[in-house]
Image (cartoon, one colour):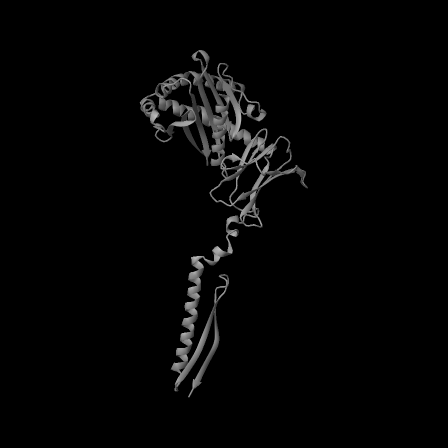
Amino acid sequence: MFSHTMIFILLCVYCFALQTTGAEKHSLQYLYTLRSALEDELEFEITTVFDGLIISHCKSPRFRDHSTEDWISQAFTNAEWNNRDLFCQEEFFSHKPFKEKIETVINTTKGIIQRERSCTEDDSVVYMSDSWGVNGEDFLTLDPKTLKWSSDSPLATPVQSDWNQMKFMTPSLKDFKLNQCKPSLMKLKKKKEEYLKLNPPPEVYIFGKSSQDRDTVSLRCYVIHNYISGVRVRLTQNGKVLNKNVHISSPVPNMDGSVQIRLETKICINETDRYHCMVDTDNLHITKGWDGRTLNKKPLYQTLVSDESRMHDPSKVWIAFTILGIGVGMTCMVILAVAANSICLIKVYKMLEYIYIDGHSGLEVRCVQMSINVS
């Protein structure tokens, strides 16, 4: 059971990390897990995640929400932590009828029911999301504008209809956003900014370097930090951690007193793949995606195009024909000008040789022989 819960949490955290790559966003997620235990007792837990970092966890029957991180603990007063304990307990009782309704349509009491509620701040605007899953499959999704549920599974249709008719559901969703999620998000955001002023995060660089065979790329991740101990670095491909053929260097000191760790692996060229460098410290989770460029920000894929493809580029063929047409036209104009100004019969003998140069220098037109006889 624990493994299913952790897989759900890690997937939610990773999906959020992908969405926020390259953008300054902040998100607070509440990840619920409900399942039946012995004697039909409900096991209930909420894991709270802020910007990809698990900050607290509460579980039945104690309902105590707490954090092991000092800067997270300091974000809330003792009274606010007590309110979070009460929130966890109230959510336990309010979710009991939801669980029973879902179990009637899936015809089992042994399933794992999961819920992900979150609020995300983007450019000072806070958005809310809410979704349910059953045994790892999507079940229901909330429309944040209409606050109506839509089914993601044929089994969810009766639940969707039932919940959309509940009059208390809409106020409850609004209350969660305005009185629980958004205030907590703002407090954590402010505390994180204060923490980072005193404790700068690691610098993370991910870039590619072309290989001699021009079919592979050397993908590299550099992490620089003053305190490298306890820092975990991983390279991922489409969400999966790359474990094979990844070279990790020993920490190397820099001139400024910081320490650097390098990860390097070779990958095949495929622009549809998505690569990320993920860094975890005791207090932060950082994810940075590769944008297909080198360290000096040059597009790597363009430099790896073969010479053969360049020669067959249709645009270059049209340029060649254009230059050819201009050359021939200018030659005809010269001939007409000479004929118009001559009182005698002009015999023109000419031979032109056209040389196409490699697709790089365009088309060269060279006059090999031209004689003009005036009689």
